Length: 327
Image (cartoon, rainbow, N blue to C red; front, side):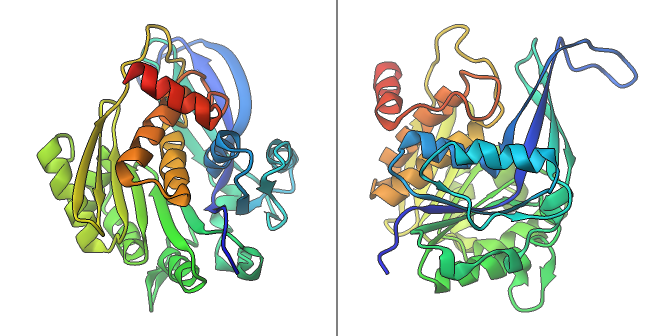
């Protein structure tokens, strides 16, 4: 079978946004100015990929609830003809993230209700129905069964990635930003079966113990990710600078983020997912790492133009045009 497209598996979430004046200190008050509900979790990445190129097949493996949120999540994905939702399982209650967007700082805070995320595991994946070239597992540290220990592979997530490799797919992972002792226990086993790892600087530090804020320290963190098992591309993104390591070519890449016009940024939710969509699209399309990172930077920039995690994404040619204009 000639494989084509990208399979995104993991935590499909309903994001409920609350726009507030400021994020209050403990025990203090802030006024909610507006509320919205959008698709979130791996839904950000799925919609970004689908909008970037409507000819790219995007397969989804996930669990959503039998509730109204589950119905809305499926409806949002079904609007795009290149998204295949046939293997999405409906069970229990949907996962929900309450996203607090502060108008003054443009930063957001998350409160997560796990629901279906705690149900997802390999039994929900029908390998025989996945024709994709790339298998992306999102998010580590957010799914109870995926993060659970496994006697053979280290974690259940590592087992899933190992199976995806055996099926002939390129594997990719993402994680949530968590600073805790369990990061290494959950993420490191998965990296042994990971071809592409795209994370932010705080996540890289949590995994490697190396502060990845500058060029040389980022290089060290990326090389440590390679040592831990990442076999193709290791990428660290941040608001100003982005670093990558081509593990096969032994090549370090550094690309600055774009300087955006005043008032361009409306929110930061989903920018990391948008960046990841550019990396995965580049890998699928045969780009080299530097070209994929440039595309990812353009994707992330457009994501910032809207408050939610998906509405900002544009078609491939528009993303390249923005990058060329502002780089």
